Amino acid sequence: MKNKIVVLGANSFSGQDFVDLLLDDPNNEVIGVSRSAERTALFLRYKSRPDLSQYRYHQFDFNHDTHKLLALLDAEQPGQIVNFAAQSEVAPSWEHPEHWFQTNTVSLALLVNHLRKQKYLRRYLHISSPEVYGTCVGTVAEAAPMNPSTPYAASKAAADFLLRTYHKQFGFPLVTVRATNVYGARQQLFKIIPRSAIYVKLGKKIQLHGGGKAVKSYIHIRDVSRGELAVLERGQPGQIYHLSPDCGVAVRDVVETICNSMGRKFAEATTVVEERPGQDAAYVIDSTRARTELGWSPQIGLREGLTEVSRWVEENWVEITRQSLEYQHKP
Image (cartoon, rainbow, N blue to C red; front, side):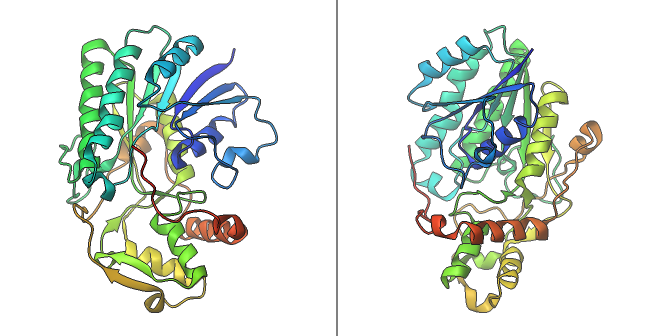
């Protein structure tokens, strides 16, 4: 019997890689849902597969097509739902915070309140964010208090509190993942890692907010997808699981690695600009729980992953130059 899984936000960077991983198992029947039209193979890893008979895609807006989405879920009756759907950019959330709360909290409330009454759902995997903790002092474990610094992080914290109440009150089959800074080939082009590789090729200056001093915990998308699958399959209901590398690294060091690998001097390729409002100084979270309970650990080193991104940019250069390099907000 097929294992039916719905992936919300399947067109996103994280969602598409998770879909691709699910399709490795012939017993999985995967249904993807996102608000935009299905993207091309440039951004969707699974599109390179010769057989996609296990996969179906539906274009529904999480905010405006809620009733259609709920009708689809009730018709398909998936045993598992994974939710990547979110407004996820930090800086623009200061301009229209209501859009972030609408998607990340209000629409989620409608979804979860419906799902908790349905008998078909066995597991709900929620994709949260370590930004709910604010600036991490030392290494932060899952029990740390939430202390968000931006409207985006506040909307995700509100979502986490909401889901927690449904688990406590109704036994909603919740498991939660908070992964650090995800990167890899096919990431949105305005993100710092692909943007750096693109700007090196274009000969443009890479802007380093605050000089690139902020410490991030960059982790390859496939390592995160593997961890999310382990949590979906074996995580304890109600628990939060961190996915993170062994240590953090300053943004400037990541950009310098990309510049060196592509033959351009770091000093010539970069310029320092003002730090973004609410930028947390560090995200270093403890992933001991996932490592010990689930046997998960990251397998792809940062240098290897950055080389993969640079190669993806080189190999797809013509198509990439036709894409926008700027974030385009959709309410």
